[in-house]
Image (cartoon, rainbow over all chains, first blue to last red; front, top):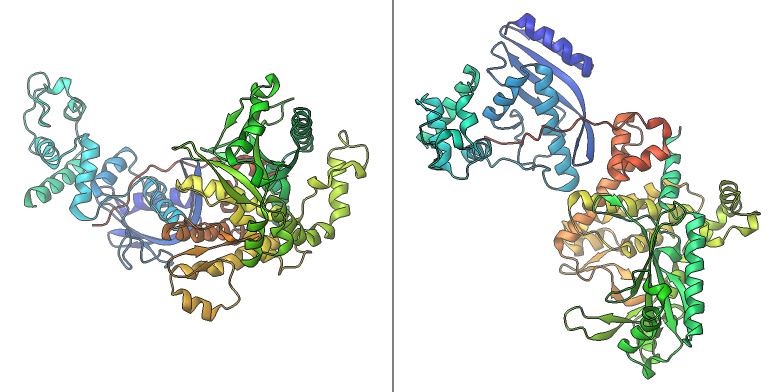
Length: 216
Length: 396
């Protein structure tokens, strides 16, 4: 995505967050200023505002933007925050898959950044995160895939991920599902997984995750 | 619209209406006559939040429910001449044998009998808890006085019955609803008298079809800023603990602490100013949770309403010094109590000058959307919050 397109996307974002400004650099834009969010979960509305800085490169959406909180309002004991580091918005692959549906900066901010601050404000108020959190490091990635693939073991995650990234020749009618259910794929829950085509952008993330799993 | 004024409307909408008050009063007076006609000598009187004028509509399992109205049925029998089981059933048997009361879904609970009154003429229904009791024995009253309870309160003590849900055995427990009302009323009186005339006039004007003159307005329906603050805090507690999925602290803790703090405030304060005063005072105790209690007591010698001796938390019942409201608190209960107080400050005080969106969201979180809209009809278009996508945070 070239710079002019990124700037156009920023203009859309600014309609919702007029206090944001944008600076252009060689192969990226830097968005900074105040965002206000207002979100609800389980009939619990929370609103807030934070100063942020977002780095969006011309590789967007393949490259997930990095977000810094610059008003120093995040308590340092919040386990999904490291001072001076980008915010821990979520598992990159999960963000990539969701971003695939709407690859815009506005969607990124309104979904992932707002979700992050909702979770944070909920934690500040109630002492727990509202709809769960991922374990740190690789364990959290496994948790994501277990939910995404609807399986309960790391082995099943690896088998399914391998089948996707190695582009294994899966015959939906005849092959047994790699999840180990002993069912032909067409009868298994994973039939939808093998009948869809993933974008290059999603495949890059799957490949990286598989490499990390195997190395582990 | 001055945002500071909306708390009165919110509290008013949580309170019982004059119709409900009249209905409940008629019901307990009728019950009193019924028991008298059955040969039972007793005195039936309100207790708890109905008696102190701090009643609010309960919020349970995420929804507003019928009101709970608590009554004491104090038998004239001497404690030495009866026992707990007999006391409970002297009241329960005639109710069970009466077609009228048996049809009210009469149920026995550990301490009381409960009757359900369905909603009549479109109003909200209520359940009435009847607490059988006798006057406390002389030995106990003397012991209470020796423990430091003021004599005028100790003399009002009653013995209530308690049925063990496992063994089904009955035993005595102590209570003092009349003493508590006396204690609360003494603190509340300057607050009530500050605006009594205008408050009664308002009640009359709002219910013109119901009362023919200001004099007809029952004193029990007058509300002071102190009572309103307690009602607002109780509502926030209900919402907060429901959202946090935790067991809420009992209302007596809130009522007692707020009344104690209000002793040091000016009765002329508005509801918002008193709320701010109370919340600031209570939040000072938060450090009791983190630092040594000895250090806390040294640096805050006047803060003694909530105590922690390192292993036990104490909020004393003002009319029974042997009764500790926080007897069963563990560390997490205390932590959560102070977290709740911080949330009250965030929702009601810190957000008072914020944008409409932020302020209304805080009110929706603190008292509920419906109450916010009924208090600020102009805010009806706010509150359609986008849902989160539930992306879980993760740290690499």
